[in-house]
Image (tube, rainbow, N blue to C red; front, top):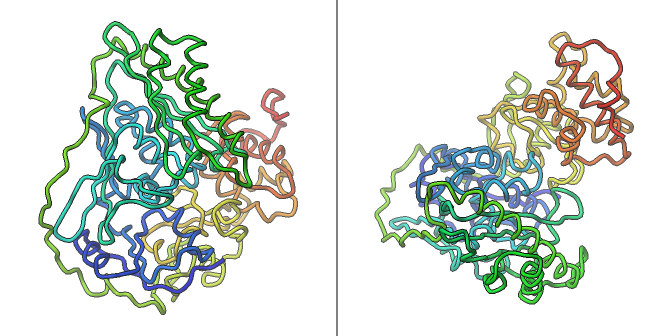
Length: 492
């Protein structure tokens, strides 16, 4: 469960990244890495060169205007999800992003990376396909816009050229007389969906349904988009919704797999269609009195090729030495100068090179959460992050949650008070996750506590006590006494 050796390049300019990528026959771009790194660890992908673009902060933007939302290649899921301008301009973005894995994954993963990965079970490719979004593909000497209708050509396959890097994704704005909704069904919240549906409903000035379209994930080799307008010629009522559900069941072509049968996925497509179309219609009526912010059918024109000035950064930034790298990791306020191969995962570097064995390694593909640490204050999976990529960040491990005098911090004390641990293997990941979660939600209720820890697995089935510990930690952080939890806040 470790990546094969590879050469590592961290460009300092976009021009350099384009030049290096074009020169490598077998290279992968690393941005969020939440899909790429587990594939490399399982040896399903073994690139000769990894081009890490995390040194290009100018690509970490989210911009909204009357035409739509532009998302840079380094903007994180969580960044876009929390951007009020993006949610106002195109509500479907936030609706779908909230269903992407868990907050810990969204803290590192990128929308652009998800779009380019082209997984038919992912949320964003279906959103872009439904909305008619596009991406900007750049290469040395050229730039072009690629619409979602031509971007996806097969399972995990796009029409991008071997020398093209996607630097931006664009989604059109939603007009006043339109509404969107998104829903999906997964075996466990945050897992890949068995089926998911996004709906876009447009009304005319009188409030009559003008168009109904829906996009489907996990029911084909690529995202599936269906025009359901015919079912709503007489309006939106139970009969029309039932007809649309049947059109959905007839229009998708899922396959049997170990998670669900094709018939079950087809049934889910119908049920979810009725649900999200109804919700999107309600949203469209609510927006009817508002001024248009853009047109949902707006498309960018294909841009002609343009020159890209290629400048050379210092030689060390483009070093492709696969052997050993000098890395300075700032962990719990201390600097650790380590020598690691580029393929060394941060989880392994913390344990073996820094001697901080509190970070535990479980699944090594981002599912269990035992390896969770804080990166600049946000929880991330250290098994999905290369140590060389973390050089400029502030890392906090479970050891860093203690008070300055070495006594237990409030989250640690709460887990002790509420017996929120048994074997203790998963505990470090829970502690770091909860510590960050309480920064964002200082006074969680039971449901917020469950949402907070939803991305972490406990093999000893101690979830109830862990939820109690979250609530207890909130009290301790607030300086309250060690009294028992109020009865109304005790999970049942």
